Length: 354
Image (cartoon, one colour):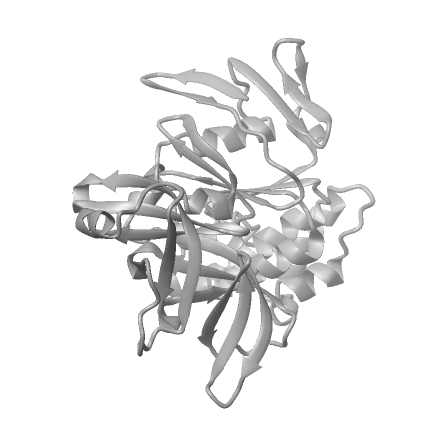
């Protein structure tokens, strides 16, 4: 919990999420995300605060507990890589090691995870933006943090550089199992990386929880974005090479997608845009759609700016979100508890790293 007043603004935010994993603080610029990061790091002393990491109190203004930043063992990565320009990549990385005590994260492991082997002898000025950020992340990791704080680390990169670095971040979270608090206002970063999602607007927490549950909530501002959609953890069940399709198990349902270049049993994540989900009460005949998913209508909310309705469809383990016209809701007689079929084209399902 963090409460703090700034001139003309303030934050009053509280949330509780599991570790390890990536917790995304998501919201528009000026919502208070960076202030929360700074309070966790010990760089901002809030008017009121209660911050606990894995049962250890970092701050509690009520009882006077305030660990200084150097004792919190948190790693910080900002928009700007902030590398030492006169040092090589290798020396920048080893600077993190010099500031740390003994730890389990080794130099060679970080170099391999972040693909830095071919860059070690170079200076920061010769690197691309994505390469510099990978070095900054490596330096933060080699300081042996028990929590990694990332404040919009990809915001200054173009789309190509973002696409370059996101897979490295996915490998990082899977391999090292360090809790990561990740600030962003880019939804594509959330759906690809986050395990938990905290929605923040005007300094307050709108919702917090598992990313799959929050992404499919029709009552939240997230559902009113053009790119709204469900996010589901998936596993590769089988490949149908003849028909160039892969069968995925996700949310307790089966989804067919274009052939995936990965072995059966592998974990993935899929995103299904709300605008691509068609609803029906009966399975149509002679249709090209591969995915006809049975679910239960969980909730319906109005999307007034688009003159649309948002329908949550509960699955055995998760939910889908559909944006349809209010007329479609009326024609199908949809209401909470009513069975419904979700029709999803294979080509519209986005397959992401887990």
